[in-house]
Image: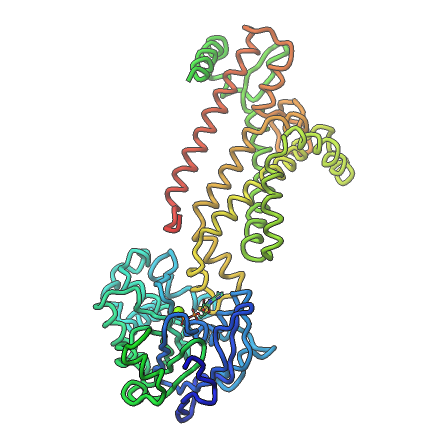
Length: 264
Length: 268
Ligand SMILES: Nc1ncnc2c1ncn2[C@@H]1O[C@H](COP(=O)(O)OP(=O)(O)O)[C@@H](O)[C@H]1O
Ligand SMILES: [Mg+2]
């Protein structure tokens, strides 16, 4: 069985309020279709994991939630994605404003080639932040569990940090914007197990304040951190539901095969 | 190395007759007429006027075109403009000189009637246009070397295209951009043919770009293409002027090297 089809998919509907609602979304790059008819609802203050084999469309779906696909000229999105109840792909929607409210952490740490402090303050600065920048830097770094390691060297380059520290700096940078949602695309894939553990613990704290959607190819990670899991396969959403259910009592045969490690 | 030896020995010969104090202390350059005077400042001033004017046009213009190519131009437009820049950069400089005389100067004269037939402004404008494609092409290369992931980080923080290109991409490409500026300045500084044709050969210490001036290089052209007898003091003076050109160019290069090293980003 390759084609699940929308009607056969098992999609759980969590209770409201939702941070993001994905309705019948298709994404194609030119003629090749990467996301097929996906619908799911992401409740506020939860961690939702997107899992599935490489190339199944996880990143594409994630990047359609903050319109980062706009920068890929061949990418075309149809369907609707609701954020705070309005369609982010509506004609009058402003993707720049949207990205202030939906932050993103990338697969490879990508701090700006400037000081640690400036990495944090730049985003709020261009968006007209009026408050106390020193406090903002400290609180963002604290929430990203990085403050103790960098407090004495805020003027040093962000690139001088270790990979794990750089990724936490990128998380702090996203937090400093005080977004509603943070999208993370395999944030730990370039990190050692120690750094990965730190970030996983961090995510559990962050969900008090933010909604997090995390793409991961690491099934243990999805189980450890997420409340809901979406399993995708060849562009389709196969199964979405509470994480324990998806891993312990999957409804779909494909999901069962994947979470038991039979392919992927 | 041989060239430097000749340059050095002729320069020393020159300074046997003309004192270094006169060379750097006098404000009159009159090597052909009695009483001869060898104060270098009018030539340095003329060179400065051309270099500054050309830089004012070529540097922002080149950076602008580079940014446009990198951030805003459709791939098709870019594929067309990029080779065009390389062709423009290869046009012989004498062509730019004629362009100055036949197009730029008459236009200037129409707008500003005080403009002389030979004038610094016209030369500075064409030298600016001449260095622009090189600056544009080098800036484009430097900007392109900035990884997509860093720009995406900017966009993901709710930055506009303009904010990302000016505040993320440009700083990350700074060493390459500065290197292109310095190359432009040193090319303008050493430019010879276009300047000789357009700015004339009137050594004059002035900041008025509508007047004729003479640069270090065009003085060398004037003497070496004229009937100045070898061994005469005017003839020797071109070696002293050449020496000064060499030293300043060397200083430029050292400055460029240290700046590029200082701003060298991790992406190159
Ligand atoms: N920029 C792009 N241009 C063209 N095709 C792309 C692009 N990005 C991804 N794809 C294709 O879309 C499909 C889904 O990719 P992606 O969303 O990156 O998957 P995942 O993150 O699950 O590994 C793949 O077939 C991939 O080759
Ligand atoms: Mg991916």
